Length: 335
Image 1 (cartoon, one colour):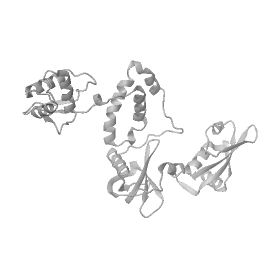
Image 2 (cartoon, rainbow, N blue to C red):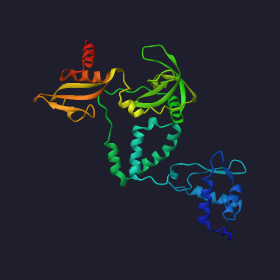
Image 3 (cartoon, one colour):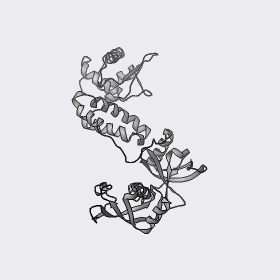
Image 4 (cartoon, rainbow, N blue to C red):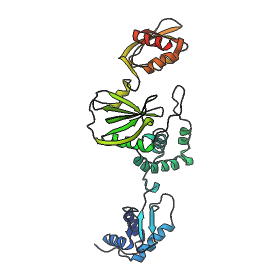
Protein backbone atom coordinates (compact mmCIF):
# COMPACT_ATOMS: atom_id res chain seq x y z
CA UNK A 1 0.00 0.00 0.00
CA UNK A 2 1.50 3.41 -0.93
CA UNK A 3 2.28 5.72 1.95
CA UNK A 4 -0.07 8.63 2.42
CA UNK A 5 1.42 12.07 2.00
CA UNK A 6 2.03 13.94 5.23
CA UNK A 7 0.20 16.92 3.73
CA UNK A 8 -3.14 15.01 3.48
CA UNK A 9 -4.11 17.28 6.35
CA UNK A 10 -7.89 16.88 6.50
CA UNK A 11 -7.75 13.08 6.36
CA UNK A 12 -4.87 12.96 8.83
CA UNK A 13 -6.77 15.10 11.34
CA UNK A 14 -9.81 12.85 11.06
CA UNK A 15 -7.64 9.83 11.83
CA UNK A 16 -6.04 11.71 14.72
CA UNK A 17 -9.42 12.52 16.28
CA UNK A 18 -10.57 8.91 15.90
CA UNK A 19 -7.38 7.68 17.59
CA UNK A 20 -7.90 10.00 20.53
CA UNK A 21 -11.56 8.97 20.86
CA UNK A 22 -10.29 5.58 22.00
CA UNK A 23 -8.52 7.13 24.99
CA UNK A 24 -9.55 8.51 28.37
CA UNK A 25 -8.05 10.53 31.22
CA UNK A 26 -6.69 7.37 32.83
CA UNK A 27 -5.48 5.92 29.50
CA UNK A 28 -3.96 8.85 27.56
CA UNK A 29 -1.48 8.72 24.68
CA UNK A 30 1.87 10.43 24.23
CA UNK A 31 2.93 12.10 20.97
CA UNK A 32 5.17 9.11 20.25
CA UNK A 33 2.27 6.67 20.69
CA UNK A 34 0.05 8.78 18.45
CA UNK A 35 2.76 8.85 15.78
CA UNK A 36 2.95 5.08 15.93
CA UNK A 37 -0.83 4.71 15.45
CA UNK A 38 -0.83 7.22 12.58
CA UNK A 39 1.99 5.25 10.98
CA UNK A 40 -0.25 2.16 10.98
CA UNK A 41 -2.67 4.21 8.83
CA UNK A 42 0.24 5.15 6.50
CA UNK A 43 0.62 8.72 7.85
CA UNK A 44 4.34 9.35 8.45
CA UNK A 45 4.76 12.55 10.49
CA UNK A 46 6.94 13.76 13.34
CA UNK A 47 6.02 14.06 17.01
CA UNK A 48 6.33 17.83 16.60
CA UNK A 49 3.74 17.77 13.82
CA UNK A 50 1.38 15.74 16.04
CA UNK A 51 1.70 18.44 18.69
CA UNK A 52 1.02 21.17 16.13
CA UNK A 53 -2.03 19.29 14.81
CA UNK A 54 -3.54 18.89 18.27
CA UNK A 55 -2.82 22.51 19.26
CA UNK A 56 -4.50 23.64 16.04
CA UNK A 57 -7.61 21.61 16.86
CA UNK A 58 -7.72 22.95 20.42
CA UNK A 59 -7.53 26.53 19.12
CA UNK A 60 -10.57 26.03 16.87
CA UNK A 61 -13.19 24.55 19.15
CA UNK A 62 -16.82 25.15 18.24
CA UNK A 63 -20.02 23.61 19.64
CA UNK A 64 -20.52 20.00 18.51
CA UNK A 65 -17.34 19.73 16.45
CA UNK A 66 -15.93 16.20 16.70
CA UNK A 67 -12.65 17.27 18.36
CA UNK A 68 -14.20 19.28 21.22
CA UNK A 69 -13.47 16.44 23.65
CA UNK A 70 -9.68 16.50 23.15
CA UNK A 71 -7.78 17.26 26.37
CA UNK A 72 -4.06 17.62 27.04
CA UNK A 73 -1.57 17.64 29.89
CA UNK A 74 1.55 19.59 28.97
CA UNK A 75 2.71 20.25 32.53
CA UNK A 76 5.32 17.48 32.32
CA UNK A 77 7.05 15.56 29.54
CA UNK A 78 6.11 13.42 27.82
CA UNK A 79 2.97 15.42 27.01
CA UNK A 80 -0.19 13.33 27.04
CA UNK A 81 -3.53 13.63 25.25
CA UNK A 82 -6.93 12.02 25.72
CA UNK A 83 -10.57 12.41 24.84
CA UNK A 84 -13.49 13.18 27.16
CA UNK A 85 -16.86 12.21 25.81
CA UNK A 86 -19.51 14.89 25.96
CA UNK A 87 -22.56 16.31 24.25
CA UNK A 88 -20.53 16.70 21.05
CA UNK A 89 -20.40 12.88 20.74
CA UNK A 90 -24.15 12.46 20.35
CA UNK A 91 -24.76 11.52 16.76
CA UNK A 92 -28.37 12.43 16.08
CA UNK A 93 -31.09 13.74 18.40
CA UNK A 94 -34.20 14.66 16.48
CA UNK A 95 -36.65 17.27 17.85
CA UNK A 96 -39.13 14.42 18.50
CA UNK A 97 -36.55 12.46 20.51
CA UNK A 98 -35.49 15.63 22.34
CA UNK A 99 -39.12 16.18 23.37
CA UNK A 100 -39.41 12.59 24.66
CA UNK A 101 -36.12 12.95 26.58
CA UNK A 102 -37.32 16.13 28.28
CA UNK A 103 -40.51 14.36 29.39
CA UNK A 104 -38.34 11.52 30.72
CA UNK A 105 -36.25 14.02 32.67
CA UNK A 106 -39.35 15.62 34.14
CA UNK A 107 -41.15 12.49 35.31
CA UNK A 108 -38.79 9.51 35.53
CA UNK A 109 -35.27 10.75 36.23
CA UNK A 110 -35.46 9.75 39.94
CA UNK A 111 -35.87 6.08 39.02
CA UNK A 112 -32.85 5.86 36.71
CA UNK A 113 -29.64 4.47 38.29
CA UNK A 114 -26.87 7.03 38.86
CA UNK A 115 -24.41 5.57 36.34
CA UNK A 116 -27.06 5.47 33.65
CA UNK A 117 -28.29 9.00 34.38
CA UNK A 118 -24.70 10.23 34.01
CA UNK A 119 -24.73 8.98 30.42
CA UNK A 120 -28.28 10.17 29.87
CA UNK A 121 -27.29 13.63 31.09
CA UNK A 122 -25.39 14.16 27.86
CA UNK A 123 -28.52 13.43 25.87
CA UNK A 124 -30.59 15.68 28.13
CA UNK A 125 -28.20 18.58 27.60
CA UNK A 126 -28.33 18.02 23.87
CA UNK A 127 -32.13 17.76 24.02
CA UNK A 128 -32.30 21.08 25.88
CA UNK A 129 -30.26 22.77 23.17
CA UNK A 130 -32.36 21.31 20.37
CA UNK A 131 -35.68 22.17 22.04
CA UNK A 132 -34.53 25.74 22.69
CA UNK A 133 -33.94 26.42 18.98
CA UNK A 134 -36.45 28.79 17.46
CA UNK A 135 -37.24 26.25 14.73
CA UNK A 136 -38.42 23.80 17.41
CA UNK A 137 -40.56 26.24 19.37
CA UNK A 138 -43.63 23.97 18.99
CA UNK A 139 -42.00 21.35 21.22
CA UNK A 140 -41.14 23.98 23.83
CA UNK A 141 -44.79 25.01 23.80
CA UNK A 142 -45.82 21.40 24.41
CA UNK A 143 -43.42 21.08 27.36
CA UNK A 144 -44.85 24.27 28.83
CA UNK A 145 -48.40 23.06 28.32
CA UNK A 146 -48.24 19.46 29.58
CA UNK A 147 -48.32 18.54 33.27
CA UNK A 148 -49.22 15.49 35.37
CA UNK A 149 -51.66 16.44 38.12
CA UNK A 150 -52.84 13.52 40.29
CA UNK A 151 -56.22 13.80 41.94
CA UNK A 152 -56.53 14.54 45.64
CA UNK A 153 -54.50 16.67 48.03
CA UNK A 154 -50.86 16.62 46.93
CA UNK A 155 -48.24 16.26 49.67
CA UNK A 156 -44.50 16.88 49.36
CA UNK A 157 -42.98 13.37 49.31
CA UNK A 158 -40.25 12.48 51.85
CA UNK A 159 -36.65 12.72 50.76
CA UNK A 160 -34.80 9.54 49.87
CA UNK A 161 -31.08 8.92 50.35
CA UNK A 162 -29.74 8.79 46.79
CA UNK A 163 -26.93 6.38 47.67
CA UNK A 164 -29.43 3.93 49.17
CA UNK A 165 -31.74 4.30 46.18
CA UNK A 166 -28.79 3.51 43.92
CA UNK A 167 -28.08 0.37 45.97
CA UNK A 168 -31.70 -0.76 45.62
CA UNK A 169 -31.69 -0.19 41.86
CA UNK A 170 -28.42 -2.10 41.50
CA UNK A 171 -29.83 -5.01 43.52
CA UNK A 172 -32.95 -5.11 41.33
CA UNK A 173 -30.88 -4.97 38.15
CA UNK A 174 -28.40 -7.64 39.24
CA UNK A 175 -30.72 -10.07 41.11
CA UNK A 176 -29.16 -9.52 44.53
CA UNK A 177 -30.77 -9.99 47.93
CA UNK A 178 -30.90 -7.19 50.50
CA UNK A 179 -31.02 -6.72 54.24
CA UNK A 180 -31.76 -3.40 55.95
CA UNK A 181 -33.05 -1.54 59.00
CA UNK A 182 -36.65 -0.34 58.80
CA UNK A 183 -38.47 2.32 60.79
CA UNK A 184 -42.23 1.58 60.72
CA UNK A 185 -44.59 4.44 61.45
CA UNK A 186 -45.14 4.67 65.21
CA UNK A 187 -43.05 1.59 65.99
CA UNK A 188 -39.47 0.70 66.89
CA UNK A 189 -36.87 0.23 64.18
CA UNK A 190 -36.12 -3.39 63.35
CA UNK A 191 -33.79 -5.32 61.09
CA UNK A 192 -35.22 -6.86 57.94
CA UNK A 193 -33.04 -9.88 57.34
CA UNK A 194 -32.10 -11.27 53.94
CA UNK A 195 -35.01 -10.75 51.55
CA UNK A 196 -35.64 -10.81 47.80
CA UNK A 197 -36.28 -7.36 46.26
CA UNK A 198 -38.91 -7.76 43.54
CA UNK A 199 -39.76 -4.25 42.43
CA UNK A 200 -39.77 -0.52 43.09
CA UNK A 201 -42.99 1.49 42.83
CA UNK A 202 -43.38 5.28 42.65
CA UNK A 203 -46.68 6.40 44.17
CA UNK A 204 -46.93 10.18 43.72
CA UNK A 205 -43.27 10.58 44.65
CA UNK A 206 -43.28 8.05 47.51
CA UNK A 207 -40.99 5.13 46.62
CA UNK A 208 -41.98 1.68 47.86
CA UNK A 209 -39.77 -1.41 47.73
CA UNK A 210 -41.63 -4.69 47.20
CA UNK A 211 -39.83 -7.70 48.69
CA UNK A 212 -40.45 -11.37 49.43
CA UNK A 213 -39.03 -12.90 52.59
CA UNK A 214 -37.39 -16.30 52.49
CA UNK A 215 -39.74 -17.78 55.08
CA UNK A 216 -42.94 -16.44 53.45
CA UNK A 217 -44.67 -16.74 50.11
CA UNK A 218 -46.41 -13.38 50.22
CA UNK A 219 -44.86 -9.99 49.48
CA UNK A 220 -44.22 -7.06 51.80
CA UNK A 221 -43.95 -3.35 51.02
CA UNK A 222 -41.38 -0.99 52.56
CA UNK A 223 -41.22 2.77 52.08
CA UNK A 224 -37.70 3.55 50.85
CA UNK A 225 -37.43 6.75 52.93
CA UNK A 226 -37.71 4.61 56.11
CA UNK A 227 -34.95 2.21 55.05
CA UNK A 228 -31.38 2.57 56.36
CA UNK A 229 -28.17 0.54 56.66
CA UNK A 230 -28.72 -1.33 53.42
CA UNK A 231 -26.52 -4.34 52.77
CA UNK A 232 -26.29 -6.24 49.47
CA UNK A 233 -26.39 -9.99 50.03
CA UNK A 234 -26.05 -13.06 47.80
CA UNK A 235 -27.64 -13.69 44.41
CA UNK A 236 -31.32 -14.56 44.20
CA UNK A 237 -33.35 -16.61 41.78
CA UNK A 238 -36.00 -14.09 40.79
CA UNK A 239 -39.42 -15.79 41.16
CA UNK A 240 -40.99 -16.59 37.81
CA UNK A 241 -44.47 -16.35 39.30
CA UNK A 242 -44.11 -12.66 40.21
CA UNK A 243 -45.10 -9.82 37.89
CA UNK A 244 -44.93 -6.31 39.34
CA UNK A 245 -47.60 -4.92 37.02
CA UNK A 246 -50.08 -7.64 38.06
CA UNK A 247 -49.11 -7.19 41.71
CA UNK A 248 -50.14 -3.53 41.51
CA UNK A 249 -53.27 -4.23 39.45
CA UNK A 250 -54.41 -6.76 42.06
CA UNK A 251 -54.32 -4.02 44.70
CA UNK A 252 -51.38 -5.28 46.75
CA UNK A 253 -49.85 -1.83 47.21
CA UNK A 254 -52.52 -1.12 49.87
CA UNK A 255 -53.74 -2.60 53.14
CA UNK A 256 -55.63 -5.71 52.05
CA UNK A 257 -58.88 -7.07 53.46
CA UNK A 258 -60.54 -10.45 53.04
CA UNK A 259 -61.80 -11.36 50.54
CA UNK A 260 -59.08 -9.79 48.37
CA UNK A 261 -61.54 -8.84 45.61
CA UNK A 262 -65.25 -8.06 45.81
CA UNK A 263 -68.18 -7.53 43.47
CA UNK A 264 -68.99 -3.95 44.40
CA UNK A 265 -72.53 -2.63 43.90
CA UNK A 266 -73.00 1.13 44.31
CA UNK A 267 -75.82 3.64 44.01
CA UNK A 268 -74.54 7.08 42.97
CA UNK A 269 -75.89 10.59 42.65
CA UNK A 270 -76.00 11.27 38.93
CA UNK A 271 -75.10 14.95 39.13
CA UNK A 272 -72.28 14.69 41.66
CA UNK A 273 -70.78 11.43 40.35
CA UNK A 274 -71.12 11.87 36.59
CA UNK A 275 -67.34 11.37 36.24
CA UNK A 276 -67.86 7.67 37.07
CA UNK A 277 -69.56 7.28 33.71
CA UNK A 278 -66.25 8.26 32.05
CA UNK A 279 -63.63 6.80 34.43
CA UNK A 280 -64.41 3.17 35.23
CA UNK A 281 -63.74 1.33 38.46
CA UNK A 282 -62.86 -1.81 36.49
CA UNK A 283 -62.94 -3.26 33.00
CA UNK A 284 -66.10 -5.25 33.81
CA UNK A 285 -68.01 -2.26 35.18
CA UNK A 286 -71.70 -2.13 34.26
CA UNK A 287 -74.05 0.83 34.67
CA UNK A 288 -77.82 0.86 35.18
CA UNK A 289 -79.79 4.12 35.26
CA UNK A 290 -82.50 3.80 37.89
CA UNK A 291 -84.01 7.29 37.40
CA UNK A 292 -83.00 10.82 36.51
CA UNK A 293 -81.21 11.41 39.84
CA UNK A 294 -79.33 8.16 40.43
CA UNK A 295 -77.51 5.35 38.65
CA UNK A 296 -76.04 2.05 39.85
CA UNK A 297 -72.61 0.56 39.17
CA UNK A 298 -71.41 -3.02 39.52
CA UNK A 299 -67.67 -3.72 39.28
CA UNK A 300 -65.05 -6.21 40.45
CA UNK A 301 -62.52 -4.27 42.53
CA UNK A 302 -59.65 -4.90 45.02
CA UNK A 303 -60.91 -4.99 48.61
CA UNK A 304 -58.42 -2.66 50.27
CA UNK A 305 -58.11 0.50 52.31
CA UNK A 306 -58.03 2.79 49.29
CA UNK A 307 -61.46 1.55 48.23
CA UNK A 308 -62.81 2.43 51.66
CA UNK A 309 -61.12 5.86 51.59
CA UNK A 310 -62.52 6.54 48.14
CA UNK A 311 -66.05 5.66 49.22
CA UNK A 312 -65.73 7.83 52.33
CA UNK A 313 -64.43 10.70 50.22
CA UNK A 314 -67.55 10.53 48.03
CA UNK A 315 -69.66 10.89 51.15
CA UNK A 316 -73.43 11.00 50.90
CA UNK A 317 -73.35 10.91 47.10
CA UNK A 318 -72.41 7.20 47.02
CA UNK A 319 -74.21 4.36 48.78
CA UNK A 320 -72.67 0.88 48.98
CA UNK A 321 -75.40 -1.68 48.33
CA UNK A 322 -73.17 -4.78 48.32
CA UNK A 323 -71.20 -6.64 49.58
CA UNK A 324 -71.80 -6.71 53.33
CA UNK A 325 -68.07 -6.69 54.18
CA UNK A 326 -67.66 -3.30 52.51
CA UNK A 327 -70.81 -1.89 54.12
CA UNK A 328 -69.63 -3.04 57.54
CA UNK A 329 -66.16 -1.55 57.13
CA UNK A 330 -67.64 1.79 56.00
CA UNK A 331 -69.90 1.82 59.02
CA UNK A 332 -66.92 1.10 61.29
CA UNK A 333 -64.82 3.89 59.74
CA UNK A 334 -67.67 6.39 60.07
CA UNK A 335 -68.04 5.47 63.74
